[in-house]
Length: 90
Image (cartoon, rainbow, N blue to C red):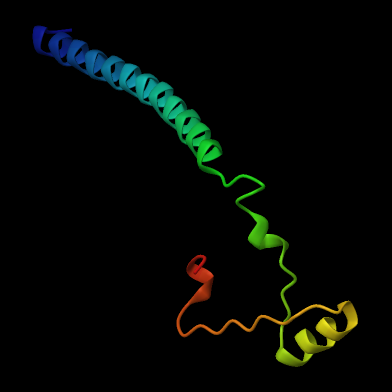
């Protein structure tokens, strides 16, 4: 094996080693970042008190709402919205 081949093989081995070490570090960093994100999401989740809105009995139509209101002796709250309600709470 001539000198040039030895240099090329050594350089290739160094590159492979550097890539392997870099991937291991990135994998560890990625797992740590994922754990941080999960923890942060749990911290920001609304509490049960903040989710009281979810306990409202929603009706699909005005007629159904009126029927349920009479049945349960409760008022009807009519909410109308022009836009995209599925993007978040109003």
